[in-house]
Length: 219
Image (tube, rainbow, N blue to C red; front, side, top):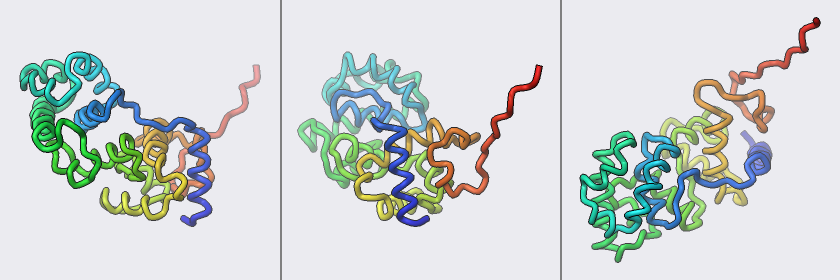
């Protein structure tokens, strides 16, 4: 895919999605970090339902530590893998208190050293909270990148590096959210909605599923 086509794709996505942002609900960087940790293999909707209650009673590292494992689990038990996530969240909060004065660090190495935080989560925090032009490759971005040929690769890191090296600079900040929302609602996994896709003529997916509009039946 050439640079001209890539630019056109992002220009159209920016028009179709004028306010690209995470669908996780948060009011502080710390709340965003916890929500992202909880969102692994879970839906944003499900995480939001849990954190609306959790953050009302505990939205600082110390407050969550004070809940203890059972108290925290009582708020997040509707989320998949909640027991392991609760352990990670508690350990992460203790690390934030002891190593970072209760603040979320803005450096990749420090973020990835936190319990429950991998490269993808670190990229989300760096991009969404700190305004850095990173691209977090989740299942949606991996699929969209390979399917459209915007960024191909066999591994998440390959796709991330491809996106970073080829995405037009003016769209690097918003690319993550533009692509994840496009993948979540249009370029879906099982049945991509090619017929209503704003980049269908630019996409290089070989198996586009475009269903023609049939004329109304005669009475």
